Structure formats: structure tokens, C-alpha cells
Length: 352
Image (cartoon, rainbow, N blue to C red):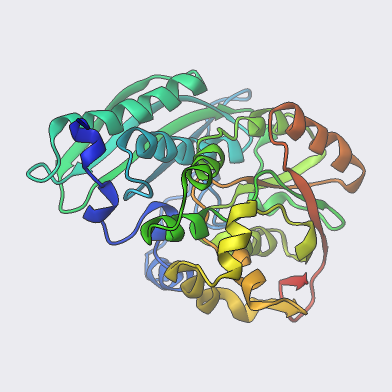
């Protein structure tokens, strides 16, 4: 007889899942535009201006504190896997700034009357296991009784003040390297309709629970100029943030992009998320697609959960950066494009 955690389908309690729950980029921009100017002390090295993955605050000449938070509703039914994915996704923001995490706080919202305590406990265990893998403690947190299940982390890390990898740091001629394959959103959509088999599920879990800890090593390299992680806004959305911050234009070749093979199969059959269309509506005016098929556009805007690092590095360092990715277990990392001068037109150009 199945235990209670196997009988419960977490995704049935939420209207969306993973980073696909994020507010659409255009709506978020409108909301943030209404905020009054905040305090900006000189110690605040990275704030809200460049749409970076985390805030960075200088502590002294050798250390800066990275602070971030990330949480979402279930992308999978297994509570332990949900906790692992959410934790890996939150910690990715620390690695994307070039730093190393030092501790995390759990953020928990659960429908107490609908989910048994043992199911909720498994979510927390999953998150804690990922933090142990990262070598950090879950040192506390906060919980509420909510209508839909929510889990994530507030995470903190450290980085040298001179090694911060902001969206604003990319340079003309930089190579663009993507650390993980695209297609997580497509697989989550296939799962909701019961079309994802065990092999496809394992492929999704393999991508979403792989810690982006290579970011800490990349952060030590002076020839790595900028980093971000690809999550709910899709590859195009997060690349646009980097391009805006650095004043550059990106040129991509679709065929160079790594894609989860089973996701490619599903997207060719028309499987996609609603967030993909919302993403395109938000920023499509800044993108030029040249001979790009509709299914390719879907993958370019597909919301990733715990997606790969997107790295802008000196062109001559691309092979060494890729070698570092491979050595850390990112077998599908690939050089996908270059940064060029931008004057007008699309911030991102993609060739099919």
C-alpha cells in the first residue's frame, strides 16, 4: 500500500508551478516603476537597477554579502523532489553573482488543513538535503498557513567585492555560454497532462536539482565578466536583462543551444506553458527572430526552473570556461552566441 506522500499530488493544490509562477516581466516592470527611490548607501554594490539575481552589500575590503530569496508553488508532485528543486533554484542566485552560499532560511506556506504534516515534512527534508549538498545549514525560517503550497529559501552568501558578476559587467565581443539545457517548462507542462514518462521525469529532476556551484569558481576568473541564471523569464528574458545592464546586443544561433531531448519532442508536438506566451508578450519587441520556427521560439521563452548559468566571458577564455563547466558535471554546457555593439533595433538577435 502506498504511503501518504505517494497518494498526494502536490500540483493539484496550485494554479501554477516552479518559476512559471513568476509575474510576467512587463507586469513586474510596471509594478517596480511605481516604487519610490530607496536608500542607496555606497556599500550597496548591487541593488535593483540592473535586474540582477541578488543584492550585494560590501562588508569590508575582502568580503561582500550576497542576499536573495526565491520561492514558488510545486512543479512536481513528489514533496521531497519539490523541496530539492526549490532549494537548488534559490541557491542558484548566489552562484550567479560569483559567490558561495553560507546559510539559508526556509520560507514555507502550506494549506495545513489539506496537506498532512508528513507531506510538508518531506518538502522541508528535500530542501534541507539540497542545502547539505551545498555545504550550508538551514538556520531558521518562517511558515504560514496558505491556500496553495509554497516553498523556497532566503539565502545568503559571500563574494569578494572585486569579483561580483553583475548583469552590468558584460563586454563587447564576449562569448555567451549556457550551462544547462532548455526545456524544463515544457516537461512540466507534459507532466500536468500525464504525458511525461519516468525517463522524462528523471531528465527533468536531473536538470533542476543540479546545483550551479560552478558559479563560485567562475566568479574567481577576471575573464568572466557577467553571469545570470536562466529561470522564469526564459533564456531570452534573462539575456535581455544582461544586455540592458551592459549596454550590449546579443546574437544567438538556435542550433547551438542545448535542449533536453525529450522536451524537444514534446514542443514539436505543441506542448508548452502559458508563461512562455506571457514572456514573449512582455519582451518580444526587443527581440529579432530570423528564420526561427514557432517551436524554437517556445523554447527560447520557456520558463526554466533551477535553470543553467548564462555566462558572458572574454572570447579567448570560452574554451577554458566550458572546460570548467564540463569538469563540474555540466556535460551539455555550450557556447551559444556573442555580445556585439547595440545602437538600435533588437537587443537580442536569434538565427534559426
